[in-house]
Structures are given as C-alpha cells and as structure tokens.
Length: 174
Ligand SMILES: CC(C)(COP(=O)(O)OP(=O)(O)OC[C@H]1O[C@@H](n2cnc3c(N)ncnc32)[C@H](O)[C@@H]1OP(=O)(O)O)[C@@H](O)C(=O)NCCC(=O)NCCS
Image (cartoon, rainbow, N blue to C red; front, side, top):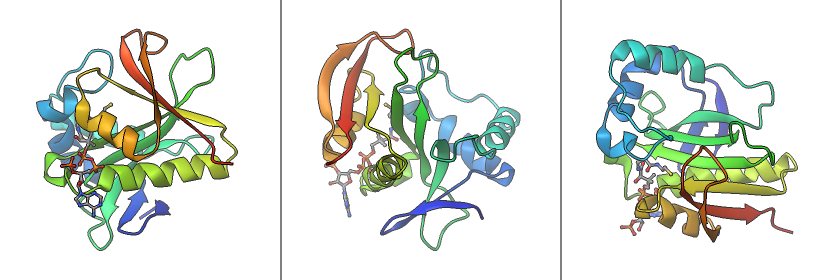
C-alpha cells in the first residue's frame, strides 16, 4: 500500500490496479457521476475502470498533486472514494483544484471534508497560495463540503472546464 497522507480516521493512498472493481462501483453510479466533469457520464464497464485505476495509480511528477483513494483506517482494501488536489486542466491562471468523489455508502460521515482538509494541508505545506473548488450550481452537498473547509464562495464562473460552475476558493492560512 502506498500511503500519501493520513488524517484522524482516514488513510489516503494511491489507487492500485486491483481496485478496479471498487472504482467501477463508485464511478458507474449516476448519483456520483452526474456531478463530475464537463460532460457527466456513468462509467460503462469494468474494463474502463481497470484503465482508470491503472492511470490513477501512477504518481504525478509533482507528488503534491494527485487523485487518491480515501480509506477508513483498518479497511484500506475498500476505498470510500477519491480526494484530489490537481492543477485545473488547461487553466491559464495556474489554478489548483481540490475535489471529492465518494461512494454513497460513505456519505454523511465527514469523510470528504476530513480527507480534503488533509489534501489542502498538503498543498499549503508544499507552498501553494490558493486552492479552488468547482461545483455544479445545484450540487449542494459538495458546496457544503467547501463551506466546512472554510472556502469562500466567489459566485458563478465560466473560467474553467468550459462550463458554468460555482467557484469556491481558499488561501493559505497565515
Ligand atoms: C459531495 C460529497 C462528497 C459530500 O459528501 P458528504 O458525506 O455530504 O460530505 P462530508 O464527508 O463532509 O460529510 C458531512 C456530513 O457528515 C455528517 N457527519 C457525521 N459524522 C461526522 C463526523 N464525525 N465528522 C464530521 N461530519 C460528520 C455531517 O453532519 C454532514 O451531514 P449533513 O450533510 O447531513 O449535515 C458526496 O455527496 C459525493 O461524493 N457526491 C458525488 C460526487 C460529487 O458530487 N463530487 C463533488 C463534485 S464538485
């Protein structure tokens, strides 16, 4: 197991190729997939999940960034979902994004907020000055995570991903 960081209740590790069935179980669900990306679609096959798990298992050149598996301590073989800290693709302003995708069974326990707080801390430790989050305007559960993290709502934005999204931001604590 390749651990990235830990929090009080959680172990955040790299996804591995053996996690493909769990990747499929999470990302094939419309209640999860409907909120993701500019053209939401549920994952269609285990083969696609295998490709995805293998891609996510590869560390980025800068280890500050990644899309990692979030696990309960003691249950590291059954990820609850993903947390991510990544440069926004094609952003011209160098924006860094934090995000979260959890299996519905893991909603309602504070795991998204706890894991994302750890990802932000990792970003601050690496010298980041500001991190954003983007949510679809009707994704209230995700906006609640942003608020619990202390992020500021900056209104609707079309600056990223070619979609209109609610933009939240947080700057490094002084
Ligand atoms: C967005 C998403 C991660 C939010 O999940 P969540 O479980 O509501 O968020 P958290 O993990 O922060 O949990 C907070 C909830 O756990 C509750 N909770 C229970 N025990 C807790 C504890 N020990 N500590 C903190 N919170 C706890 C909180 O009261 C809160 O519940 P409430 O919403 O009823 O007030 C989840 O809905 C999801 O994965 N959605 C699909 C993908 C998605 O939309 N991703 C975001 C794209 S922008």
